Structure formats: C-alpha cells, structure tokens
Length: 197
Image (tube, one colour):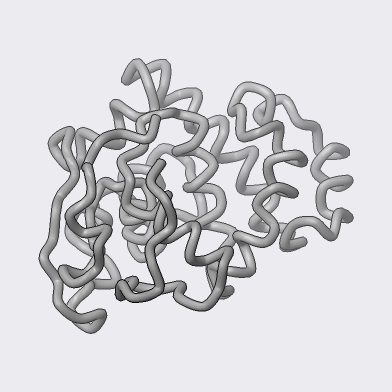
C-alpha cells in the first residue's frame, strides 16, 4: 500500500477528512478480485443509497462483524431471527430492506459462484477482465451510470438481487476498480493498476 498523499496534491475527493482521505488514497479505484471484498463493497454501496459514503465508512466495521465478514455462505444461513437482531444494532444503518437484502444477495452470489467459478469472474467479464480507465478532468464529466452498469444491474436483478440499480452499480464499479475514475490531475490516476486482492 502506498503512503497517504501529501496535502499539496489534489485529491478527487476526501481532502480534510482523514477517514475519507485514506479511502481515496488506498482503496477507491484499486482493482479487487476477492469475492468477499466484492460482496462487501456491493453490500455497502446498497446500504449507502440515499446517504453519504462517509456515513457508511464510519460503520463498515459494524457491518463486517454483524454480517460474518461478508462470507456469503454464512450470511445465506442467517435466520430471520438473526436479521432481527442485526436490525437492533446501532453499528449499522438499521433499514429493514437494506439489512434483509444482504442475505438475499448472498444467495445470489452463491448461485453466481456455482455458475461462473467465482463472483469476481462473473463481474469482471462485464469490463473485459480489465479496468476501464477514463481521463476525466472535472467531476462534472464523471457519469452517474453507464451502459455497462445498466447491463450489470439488469442481470443481477434477474438473478434475484436487490439494491443493485445502475447508479449504485456504477459507484460499486468505481470503488472496486472496474472503472478507473480518478481525475487526471489526481496522483492516484497514474498509480499502479494492480489488483488489491
């Protein structure tokens, strides 16, 4: 992992907020191929809908503890009673639909793994196996969604997933490096495009 960026550099976002700075510098846009991490980010992006990403980052450890570190096999076995207990825990966003969606989506992930060898293999085929690197100069140029995120959202919904709209999916693709949307004047735009796991 590289060191945090010097204050003299212009980040795409997060400057002045240590939690956000670390996320920007070390995670956002770094290609992810680990199924659990991919499922975690997909779940967190769904939880973020209508809220700020900072709100979710502050609760990420709570989500990891309450949702078995995003092991889809363990989550798929969670009972209704288990989920009711989760809903009472202030360490996460206590939205019933979002909480229940994690188990529902875990079942879909297991089905995808069975069909495609891994959740990663399934997801990355939508971008041809490599990050789509963009060269945006301004935030206004960055789209809210793309044809690819729309296609991925449509396919995931067919497989029973929820909280996977085209805008949520584009944010997810940015986060896990399927698309590389650091602005061109951000030091992270030219960083090593290697996988984070």
